[in-house]
Length: 409
Image 1 (cartoon, rainbow, N blue to C red):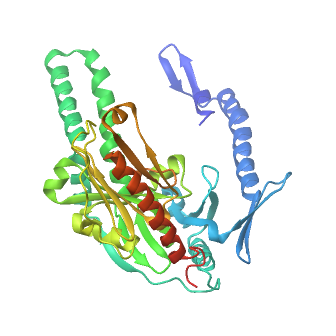
Image 2: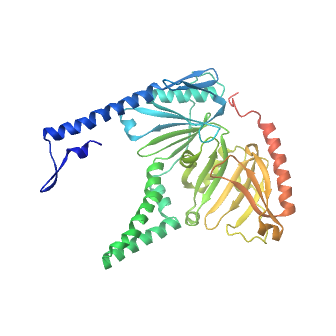
Image 3: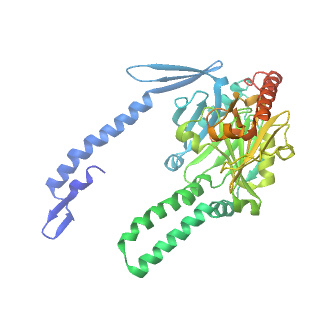
């Protein structure tokens, strides 16, 4: 690719593609060294990574001249993904991504293994992380939901921001045709790119989305060009949000987003969707599988104070023995859920307007992620009572839940 422009020759008739000896020599002088560099760097990268399972640890060695060894306890595994970009699918290869608790530099990527070897490695890591022998066969799964392609496309289109962008796109096209004003392309092209990002990109990413439950966790499969098989071991989901945009509510649709410890940055954005769209009762059923022993709709929500003046209107908050639930948002309604056993901390905050009206916000903190659970605009005395009650329930839930590692035991 770098040498291709050297095949082009400027002549009196313009730029032409010429294969004269001088041109071919110029092309080879550039292309051969660059090809050797590309192949050499690929081999160097391949030689630089070795891994093995040593007891309860995953050992990864990197580097050729300077060795670096990482020993990771399998109990820290938050998720295991099998990723197959389009080109690697042609050669029956797969990438194994192991997500660990620890932030932006906690991912281990093993590129690339044979598809069968990658699935065997995934099964062994999940078994050992659960406290079972490594040769334990892959656990069976129970199908929960498959997102139809038409429902996915419809859900992406019938959103207020997308509909507004579509109207702006057609209006700019009409103006361009009627007045032949090229300057309007400064509006049309960015709007088109926004539509591609809002509709086409998610459509390609989440096509063929399937959710299944198994003893080793939640299994997600999705992707049209790049396919991904994601496995979240039991107890790794920290918080859940049921998202219902205005038009979706009239159709009975909902989306489920999650916070999983270990994902960070771009990986977090790509892996935060547990279900892109489904009937609301399916979404609620999936949440009850993530946090066993709870029914979100059965939790009684106490409305926020009537003195609240926030734009993101808080509808209410409530709790039971398993989860803490808040609901807020207009026109897009969000129901945020966190299990008491997953709560990292509980805190009370007051901004200047809240201090003026004697209000406060209670935050039940999960690890950083798209779902942040907060009961906003509560009376100050009520907020303090919520903090004490939630902290007490969290301590009790952690004692009852025991050690989340080695869950199969």
